[in-house]
Amino acid sequence: MVAVVVGASVAGARAVQSLRRLGYPGRIVLIGEETAAPYDRPPLSKAMLSGQVTAERIALLRDADLADPKVRLRLGTRAERVDPERHEIELAGGERLGYEHLIIATGASARRAPWDPGLPVLRTLGDARRLSALLRPGAHLVVIGGGFIGSEVAATARGLGLAVTVVDPLAAPMARAAGAEIARRLSGLHAARGVRCRFGVAVTDVRRRGDGYEVGLDDGAVLAADVVLAGIGARPNDAWLARSGLPVADGVLCDPYSRVLGWPDIFAVGDVARWAHPRHGRPTRIEHWTNAVEQADCVARTVLNPAAPLEYAPVEYVWTEQYGRKVQITGRPEGAPLVVTSGDGDGARVGVLYGDDQDRLAGAVTVDWPRATLAARSVLAEGGRVGAAHDRWLGLASGGRP
Image (cartoon, rainbow, N blue to C red):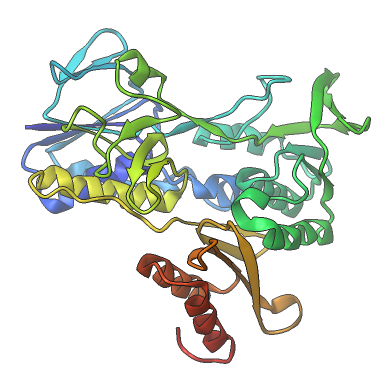
């Protein structure tokens, strides 16, 4: 019996570890296109970029995983296609590898800038090393995109002594992910640290000039830059699956048990998976670390016990750290906001609750308030209402327990 995991991502590494821990009886083969062993990605835009940690510190597989004779790593190896009828993976070079269970964990790739596809991006360890070499104190970095990656790189670069400008067509950074209220506060954090914020304007072109760049904006301004980072999102690595005839639509399509539609022995986890989320009632794809870890574990349990497959219905959760502040997002910050604060001044903890049109809690965002995030996740998991979460938060703000 052989389980093949394609993709040495966070999801892929956790799938291997979960299969081992749960006692998978056969061999486990992990195929990864990068030559580096699986590593954690959140530090790439922070501690790794600033030189505070090394690649060894962010490795995901433990010595016990690597020493297990049943586990084999095939790094620097690209999967070209799946032959689901024959239960085989075709690798670059033509080699074919058979499987009883296939877990697809090929993740996503950074979107390249349409103005200049050669602009730096940040998605891999190699990207982080190349970008780190460019971040010289005193240089001017222009970050295109105020999402997670763009905002975190801007904060890190300021700490390294660079002049930084962030450009985004939205009115505030991370507005889609964190909601308008917290996004405005994040904008203030950037400005207070000396980041030049050009929000509400779009990039029209990027031109190379000598050793640097000129970035044109739709309000007519032109920014001179030494380094330009394109932080404009990611796309799932699903082209090889489409070539294989598997169902693909912005990710490989799966049922509520993360099984690829039509193929009960093929699973997908992490950024590449779009599955029928039982809670949302529609296909969902989530590009977050917690999702990758939880979905990988859920799939491993179904592989070991296919007669009792597990529905995967997570409560979404993601976090970011910028300028020493931790922002945590759970659920989906959509609907009418309800703001709760605890404390005063710069150290105040802030939370925002969001409800749907029936007053059910849809999501919550907090700043430096982890207990409030835990309380909101609990209410979300119960399908509770905004009022229930609000009462718990008021109890926390007054010193009570969640």
